[in-house]
Length: 510
Image (cartoon, rainbow, N blue to C red; front, top):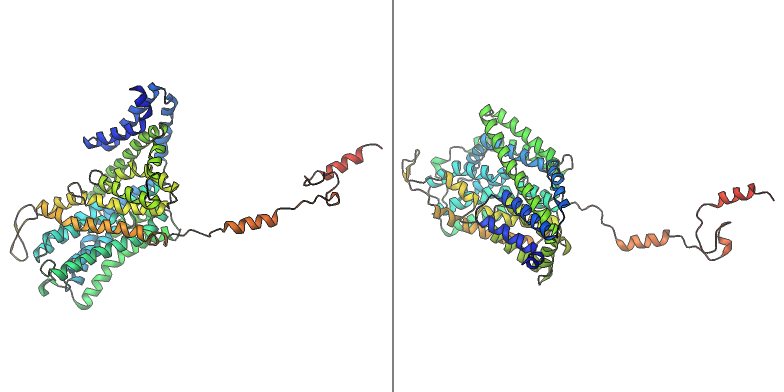
């Protein structure tokens, strides 16, 4: 039994972690408890030394000193302030009027505003709840299919996880040891392509079934002509300025992601003040939620650090690396297996848990196979986005369920009886968009330029030219004694002691 434990410590740690997670224990405590338990077992078996645990305090304080993680509370606070200041409501109302004459216009508006909110808030809950409260009643009022309406709202809200400033990309960059700015730059095109795929699906549905996504009736389009144009400009300019303030300064190298988040938080406060929505109640709610989310992230990171310390001490990282790099098919085989595994794990774990548990194990294997870690991080980010849409545990579905009508009600505008939205309709509405996200994973694998084309790799050195230059600059010492300086042996370089030798000779009496 002791020999079995000694030989299989790493697999047993991983199985024990899965066991605790399936039983519903909090992820942070499950990670830390497993790490400490197997550390004590390893010490008793003589595999580990007690000095291993002395590294824990320094690692915990290292997490507290990590400047990159400061961007998480900044972007969370920014998103909550914007969501509560009414920016989402103004955008949805304005863009809904703009796209209203088109079939599926409200769905296009939800996708457009979802992408815009993703680029300003970066918080899934804020985007889904805002659009669910504002757009869902309007879509139901004018006869939208319930599954399409539910799916497009939930899916558009999850764009906040792949379009910068995404919280998951910050965590991904930290876990893979790469720049947050590079991760943001690489995720821009995949995020926009995914938004376009959502819009393409809505267009296809509106062409096949005209009743599923009707246009707004004329009486519902209250803004027209110059009035609509002015409203669009007034509603769009502030968030666009904020996007440039945050992302533009990061991409231009003017600010770090943490500094960009701080400017974004300040900009959100200014916008809320301009809308006269800034008060103590709003500030308190935003700060409370930000503190809770930040503490949640830090505790999971501390737990994963404890687990990772013991797991690496028993060579668990080498076990996982050997397991993954020995898969048939090389890079492609590795990517297929990893993405299937992450997709299945997303049924039970959210993106924070996946980022802290799975990504540190996959990164070294991917790097050993020669895979660009920025591209790999964006690919996993697209895949992890499905964790918000998976029935039955997708958080975006839970957020939408919390604001969707649970009983029939009378619409205040039309006076008609509007049927409720069932949980089954929300789940089935999410399935097509999960399939679209899987297609997006395939597109990122097939066309890596979508990520790498946005990265500034700097000048590329040609190794052959470097070698040639070294050959040219390397001195060729001749065997001719005449070519050597006085005091230097034949065929050896002059070490610069000639003058000292001459001085020594002059001082010696003849």
